Structure formats: structure tokens, C-alpha cells
Length: 248
Length: 260
Ligand SMILES: Nc1ncnc2c1ncn2[C@@H]1O[C@H](COP(=O)(O)OP(=O)(O)O)[C@@H](O)[C@H]1O
Ligand SMILES: [Mg+2]
Image (tube, rainbow over all chains, first blue to last red; front, side, top):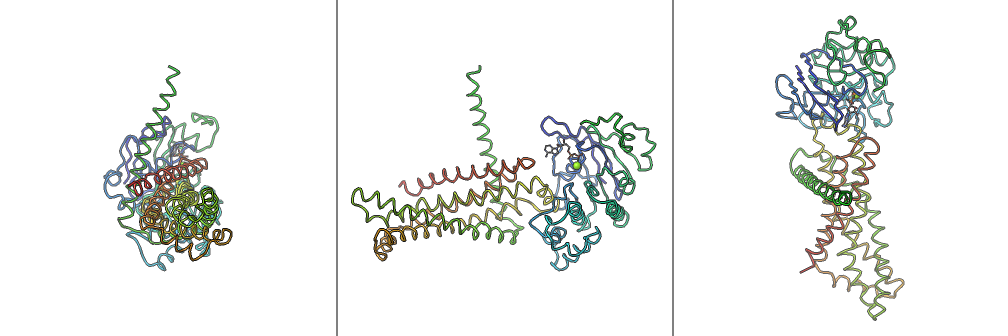
């Protein structure tokens, strides 16, 4: 269970988060939607402690995220970054197995490699990708390697930052199914950022819409279409007219 | 008021400078503490030894040999003005070992190693690879900074030692081939003239310069701003800072070793 209470963050005088309140139950899939530049990625990074919020509280299973053993805390998380963030000095399989090759989860190299190849297969990549370097892959392939890395150590809590951006519709479908599977089968808690409404419907138990630095609307995915919220309506129908300005 | 503003600007610049000195000192302290505490990353360390030490050899060798050769010519020409041409071996040795070896190797390392460390780490910062490391329970100070700092601390003194020898060899070659020195006498004069203190100071300077070069690369890389411009600024800043600090440290260390 992840709880965010009144989380605020500004960069200089640019107030990005103005008081985000969000509850994510254990074992559920929360999808965050919102215009680009509204602070969705910043929100995820605040939970992980990569960005220090200026105000507010973030609790994971009742404990403050910032306190306690950072390693033990982070070992429970997997994160897919918006830009994949692969280590370009390492071949693909070592990227995927990064956690399994060092630290507390370390295992024999051959076993780590096997797990990496299996995870690559789950994101729709063939075994021959394993020995390539990230720079040799297309953006969509890099994204999927990033996804494989996020799930490699089977974390309890997984954050996906735009997992299907840059993928063709078939691959996007594969990834949506995978995320759903991870939540249902592994019982993981997932927080996904996406702009893709078909992804939202495929992945989400609950949806939250971030706008103007606050959560404008949150509710179950089924309640999205008759929410009566003008911001949400405009967003899910992709209309240029409405309360959300097209020029931001 | 307006005539005061340059003073205000100067004051602010001094404050900013002092603040960044403090930050660099804290960073250096943290980096060194991570060198000593596990987990260690031997593969990263070996990689750093290779790129910082081994692959710098050509540049160091070329710099030293040309400098040693030019030094011999200059000392010969200068010495001839008061019939002291014979001091070439002694002055080349002392000039290379005490000053030019460490300083030139240090500056070449700043150009070659500091810039590449800064650009690499800054790129990792802007592409969120540093954030990714953290989420994979790996401390960037241990994984990226500590191996590079330790490798530079070990290899740069060795590079300086090699540079000293190659520089002296450059002077030797010029002296023997174009200035009619007797090879055996030249070598004997060189070896007899150098003191332990000269060599120790050379290697100590190397260690200090290696530390400065690696730390500045890592510091500026980790502080990088966003985008390609951020990487460019980080790289430029790191080389400037490393070069200036190396020259300042050289002045201080020369004082420490030889002012007695
Ligand atoms: N490290 C940072 N420094 C300064 N500004 C930042 C930083 N990270 C994000 N921002 C700014 O915060 C805003 C929200 O960014 P982000 O969370 O990435 O948006 P998105 O909702 O598209 O994921 C943007 O205006 C961005 O420029
Ligand atoms: Mg984003």
C-alpha cells in the first residue's frame, strides 16, 4: 500500500506538484494519466526517493519512504524509466540481470543470464538480443529491455513510466497483457503512467488524473466514462476544447 | 549604487566559490570513504585501471619524449651562454622529475581522463542512468565514483614515473645524437644527480594530480544540468577545474618538498 499525502515539489519557482493525494492498495494496478509535463514522472520519482518532495508525506506499507534502510526499501521496487535508462556500457542481458549479478540478490552468472533471456522473451524479444548493446536497439526495443530489467528480480511494487510509448499496436498489446499478468499472477502493486487510453483500459484497476499539480479525479477504471469531470472527459476523448488549455 | 555593483558581483562570486569549494570537499570525503567501504566493484575497478592507466600510456609517452628532447636543446643553448653546456643531463633530470613530468602528465590526464569521466557520468545523469542505478540498489558513489578515483590514485603516479623516464630518455637521445654527449657519462650524471626526494616528490605529485583529475570528472559529471548543454558544461567545467587545481597543487607540493 502506497499513500501520498499533500506531496509538493517545485523546481525553482516552477511548482510542479501542488499537493498530490493518492492511495494505491496492495496488489492493484493504478494508472496515472495527465498531459505531458504535468509532473507524472516526478510523482513516481518522489515515491522512490529519487526526488525529495518539498512538503507532504509518502508512506509505503505505513512506513515513511524516506526513512530506514534504503537498500531494503529499493529492493522491493522495480522501475521502468520513461527513456528506458539502460546502461550503455553493458550488454542487454547484463542490463536485465543487473540486480542478479551483484548485491544481496546475487546469483551465478549462468543462472542470471538464463533469467534475463526468459524476461526478454516475456517482453517479446528474442534471445539474440541478449548480447547486443543498448545503442544497437530501436527505441521501442530499448523500452522493452527496460521493462524486462524492471521485472527481472520480481519486485513487489513496479512503476512503469510510459511503457507502451514508441511501440507498435501489437507490441503495445503484448506489454499491456504482461503488466496485467504481473499484477494478477505475481500479486504485484503497479503504478503506470500512460497517455494511451487503450492501455489504460487494459491495465488499470484504478485511474488517477494529474492536472495542475493535483489529482483532479481518481476512481475505478469503470467509472471513467461517466465521471462527469470535465477535465477527465476532455482528456479521454482527446478534445482540443475544454478546461485543459492546449497550450501549456 | 551602480558603481558598487561590481563589488557586489565580486562578493557573490567569492561566496559562490567558497560554497562550491565546500561542496567539492564534501564530495571528495564521501568518494574516499566509499573507496574504503564495501561493496566493491572489481570489474568496474579493472575497467578504470585499463582506461585511466594503460590507455593513457601513448599520450603520456609522446608528451614526455618531446618535452625531454626540447628541454635538452634549451638547456644546452642556455648553458652555452656561460659555458655550462655540460649540465644538460642534470638539469633535464631534475626538470623532468620534479616539475615537467608530473605537471604535463597531470594536465594530459585532465584533458583525457577528467573530460571522459565527466562526459560519461553527465550523460548517465541526463539519461536517468544514475537514477536507474539507485533504483537497482546500487550506490553511484560506489559503482561509478570510487573505482575511478582509486584507479587514478594508483595509476597516475605510475604514469608520472614512466613519463619521467621517457622524458629523460628524450633528453638523452637528443643530447647523444645532436649535441655530442657521451651516452655512458650522460646516464651516470643523471643517476648520480637525482635524489630520492626528487623521485618521491614526483610520485606524490602524481598521486595528488590523479586524485584531483578523477574527482573533478566525477564531481562535475554528477552535478550535470539537463540535456546536451548540461553535459557540455559539465565536461568543460571539469577540465578547467582539474587543470587549475593541478597547477595550484603543484605549487603547494613543490613548496612542501623543496622549500626547506
Ligand atoms: N530534475 C528536474 N529539474 C528541473 N525541472 C524538472 C526536473 N524534472 C522535471 N522537471 C520539470 O517538471 C515538470 C514535470 O515533468 P515530468 O514529471 O517529467 O512530466 P510528465 O508528466 O510528462 O512525466 C516539467 O516541466 C519538467 O520540466
Ligand atoms: Mg514523464
